[in-house]
Length: 477
Image (cartoon, rainbow, N blue to C red; front, top):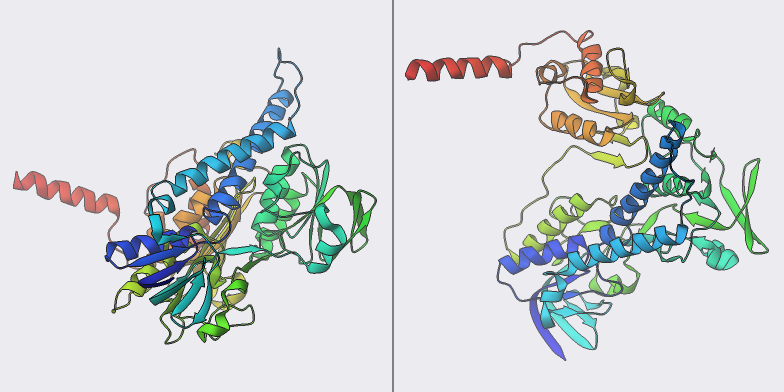
């Protein structure tokens, strides 16, 4: 069977579904080709199950804190691992159902449930059909990387974010290899659910934190909960029904090894050589970073398939741009946005703007502030929580920062918005702050910077403009 369409989208994740929405609005003929499980990375194996696990872990930890504070009258309690996993699967399935309702389920014969492969620059083969498309969007997502020798030696002792939630029960002890965002979040969640956790990373950072000072603070705080081994590559071997894991001078016997050392784009099945795509060292088609087009080919790449860090908002935005450009002659481009990364650990970790190593440190001033300074309640931050804000010493413009502490996900947004608007330290201090709130930590870091940056003539304050407007309105009345 042969089909001719205007646009073929490969992958029904967040990027692919966003691309389809753009194509449908242009009234173009299309197909959506999806192999494997339905639903987006976020709903299936990403932030949704991760946040569910973290929420349940937070509930359990709160009960323990209540005991520590002297809760009386309640019987002793323990976490039921089987019930926890069942609950996560129920929520996981409900999110997938929600994502599919009105999405792929409503596409009828425009949905082809199979893996696609190229047989030419404009031609795909899937489910016994040959599809000729004027343009093609690749949005096939990514998967966890497990070294082949580990999988061969350890077999079912290996867990990934794709398989963790499929287990019937939680293991008693787990070594988490790779302390990036996924590894760190799941380490903490499993620890709080009663699993003995050892976190291991060959590097010296957690959560890919680029700021070395904030990284030191984060490592020190996290080590209060469970062991963290940094700076040595892990090895593992079967020992009966257990796994012996070594890293540097350390070794431990565990039930399972959770691998979170990275993710790889799902491009292996596509036969990109038949499409004439030039690829990079990871096999990702080399594409324009703003239009997402692959060279001069009518092919676009969006979402995790493009090798960019996993981020639902970015995947949706890329899907929208790729879908629009695949169905229109005049292309649009991705809007330039201040980089921002958030890790939902406890306390949360975030960083904004350029990587610390990419900054010209001779031209950067740093405002540093601990959470919970005098005048704020102890609850504003555990011991060691830290915020660092970066500003250009030449004009006082805020350019980014890094932090570990409660509410970091919110402070990061404020900092990113300020940096994207090219606000100076003094202009950000004109913004309203309240007390007692965690935002005061940002205010104090900005004040610390302001003492070292000469004030420049800035726009009138928001309050001044408001008073002027009210005065004019009263006079006009």
